Image (cartoon, rainbow, N blue to C red; front, side):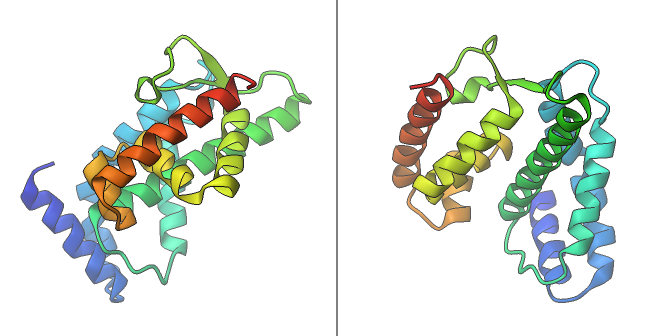
Length: 189
């Protein structure tokens, strides 16, 4: 995305925050392709017979966006952080529903992405990953949020620092600690 496109996304987010409903209509064409790429990345980690497609995941996200009336959007990074968090929640909800319908069998599995520093071939249940992130959130909300933004939102250290209002070096330290903790947690100690 070019700098002009990034600025246009931010301008539309700000206008939408100020109550301009037409801004959402202008925003979606600017971000749809990137949202589909994020959705495709999420779904590439899912089981091969997953019923959600990238477009359906983006559509579910859109419905959640429309419901968010009083969000003060400040930047493109904040928007994509929201999008990534909600896509993860949609997939976790879908996995829980699938698990319930199968009475525990066929739970969706996700190999942790390379950015986590864990081998791609290693698979972890999506629900177990969500549970670990919830535990991390209780232990360190900042570290949990950094994992979300970096791994699920695809944000750089710089963008993550901007969203959180922290120094990049501080985010980097938390990122390293959070990855190590998450690895140990998912490996069972």
